[in-house]
Amino acid sequence: MTNDNSVVTEGVDVLVIGGGQAGLAMGYYLAERGLSSVIADANPEVGHIWRSRWQSLKLFTAGRYNSLPGMPFPAEREAYPGKDDVADFLQTYVEKFELPVRLDTTVTRLTRTDNGAYLAETTTGQIRADQVVVATGPFQVPFTPPIANELDPELSQLHSASYQSPEDLPEGRILVAGGANSGQQIALELADSRDVEIAVGQKLPTLPQRPLGRDIWWWLTATRLARVPVSSRLGQRLSQRDVVIGGGLRELRRHGVAVRPRVTDASGRTITFEGGESVDYDGVVWATGFRIDHSWIEVPEVKDERDQVRHVRGVTGSPGLYLLGMTWQHTRTSALLGWVGDDAAFLADRIEATKHAPAGSEALAEATS
Image (tube, rainbow, N blue to C red; front, side, top):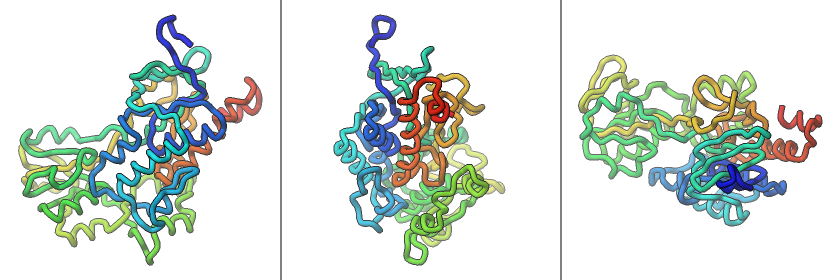
């Protein structure tokens, strides 16, 4: 197929954008249903995002909860795999199921054509697809607060996405800004060799990793809390606050980490906290999360006031356009390795129904409603 008589345009049933665990689970179910697809991934290798995280990173889900559709995770059921174990698993998964992953392929623009198909401009060419699954997830653009620009350029600063090990930071007093799971894990590691403090803007609920000797996800699964949908009253409440799994602030204090309130100001090497106290630091780790970037999606009337695509369980207002792997897409576990396949299967059913339903039929209306 050609576009404008000059640019070669590839055509597939489904374009999956993002080759992490969400995109791979989607690819598995599309292949199972006999649908042609391309999984476009911007990275140089499968599992790159996992492999690039800090060296000591461990999952807070035990091996038994980290499988993908059709393939168990190769670890002891109660062991907690490292980030390279996950990257290796994803590479093996692609090889086993011969998934059509296209690496070094960034989608720079997605539009909808007059006939209802989608056209993706990518760094390796154009792809036309009847349907599209955006599986880039919630952790796309590292967010560093503007206040960081007020600090001395000579002061060592990095985002948690770039942190690898304590050797990345100088000796002396280090501030970790951000008290969610990543910030607490990094602060705990740094405490072995640095004078570490952590700034916590909002104290988050903490769950022990193994209450009464069982993994926390055993309890959440047994009580069905892991399956509470975001559409329910309880799901709405739970989705408003993150949860820290592990020792929490009490564990950090036991390791000598001082806990401070929210950062409010910065100048030179000095950071000021809510309440007015100021402290000088030798380095800062900004564990301040990520932002979603949907600016490249140019499909009419699908975005909210924040320029993010609106959806209900991954189904958007544009027929054939879906999201996958989002936090609380359907349940607390939607973005987690061992559960992302549930939402992928749900969307694959809709994609298949839309593909095979005659235009104007009740089946098509149901599939795209």
